[in-house]
Image (cartoon, rainbow, N blue to C red):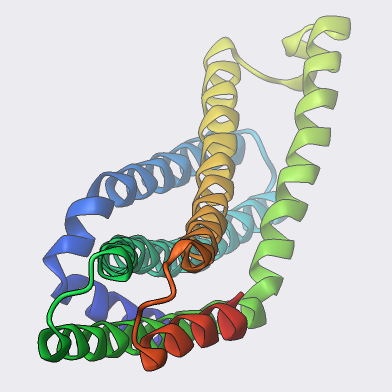
Amino acid sequence: MLFAKFMLRVFLKNPELRRISRWRILLKITVVIVTDLLQVAITWWAMKHSKDPQTTLLALQTWMSAIVNLAITQHYLITLSVQAHYHLLNIELRQVIDECRMLSFHPQRRGAFMTRCCSLADQVENIAKFQSQLQLIVNHLDVFGIEGLILYGGYYILSIAAAYMIYSIFNSGHESLQMTFMSMIISSILCFFYYMDAILDLKNKLNLLDDHETMLLLLEERTLFAHTLDVRLEQTVSCFWHNHG
């Protein structure tokens, strides 16, 4: 939680990060809230038809589900923050690579050329340092892999339960499960939002992998430079590719 709080503070200080991520944040929060509310609604309905010991278990199940959803949401927001930083780094790196290519084919006067090459080398070093910090955060997120295990284990269990419930409804009718028509609708909507949440988490991680791959492809364009750049700039770009590829 402390790690998530720190990352979100950094995220909120950057308006550009908020601009490119605000809709995904709103969508994620909306899905989580709707899922929790539907879970509460189903639990409330079940408690009305259950005995006291079962009522306690249902209440604990709802509480634990809310805690797990909170942890997964924090994990999602941190991953989204890292991915947004990667996206901005790629934009900056794209500009640096384009300028390096232009300088390699159209060198300026010696003094201006050397000054600009040193400036670009400093930019590449700053990008490399920030990318290293982002990679450390990604590695730190792997420590919380138990959250993902719990989440996808829950998806698996829900899939089995949903398949069994659908089979039982078609085979014996919803009355045999003591389910009303409204409870079936709520359960179906809950499954929809539950798996929608899973898709959002998966897409978030895939976007992060795509942005990392994009960075590597940008760095590979160093082979297209003419052999007229400053040695320090060429070495900086090459070291960045070898160390972070």
